Amino acid sequence: MAEQRDDGKPGSEVEAAGSNPPAPPPPMDPAQLEEFRQFQQFQDYLRFTQSQQGNAPAPAPDAGVVQAPPSQPPVIPPGYQLVPAERRRAPKWVSWLGKKVIAWVLALVILGVAGTWLYNHFFPNDSGKTSAQLAQEGGGKYQTNHILSTSPYEAVREVYDAVAQNLVPQACGRMDEPIQQKFAQDLGYADCQVAVHELNRKVTSKNKYAESMPSYVSEPVPGDRFTISSCQFGIEGGPALGAFTVQKVEKGQWLITAHTNEPNPCPAPTPTTR
Image (cartoon, rainbow, N blue to C red; front, side, top):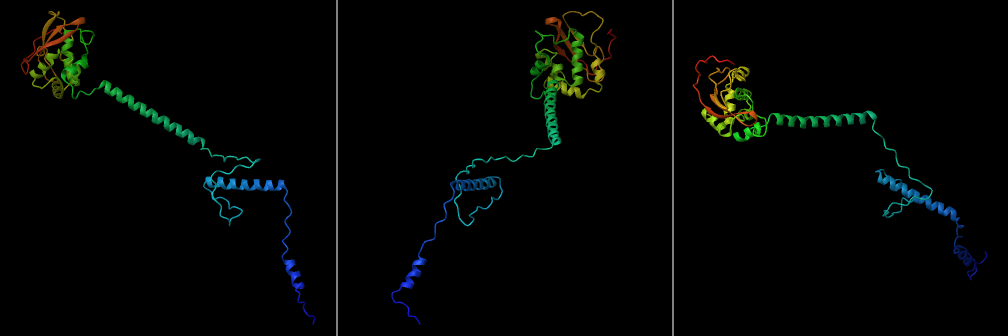
């Protein structure tokens, strides 16, 4: 056998062969390197947009490498354009139906408000108001406005008509303020408002009661102040209200300025030309 050499030359040749570094890879073309970098940025941007929309982002190329979350959205690479997703529009019949429903709701609200205002205007609430306030609201100021009747008999007939309809301002407003309270007390009530409400409960025929007192008589008016007796005309359909003294005031109007009781029931009426 051939003896191995003690100088170690064969082993040195092996070690020298194994310690040589690998040859470096050929340099990449700068254009290819830039294209690869832009492609990575585009993938990062796609993953960011998917995460914002609630979709699971696509896995990164280096799935095994832990990367820190980006602090801001990645930059869109040059040459790429983000196209927004098209939103689905509601059908035309849904939009049409929604507009109709809104229009009907608004119409109902407007009608409700208008109806409430009209009701409160024509049928005001009299609770908590004094007779003087009710008279003021029902008649205003007769000194400056035509709010009373220009016929003395019609002035009394309107009191009967207002009682038949349970209209407190119209009944009490035909009387001078001090007479409103006296009228109520003569008939046994606390005030004019209570008197009208309670007398209305005793009315059995509104038409007969309101027409028992004539609007005028053929006889001449005896003066600017005189008394009209309820018993003289025979009241039907409800209680007689006594005798009213009427007085001519501004603008040819007649105001009730006094009241007295009469026998109850009234005696048989005397013939009177109406």
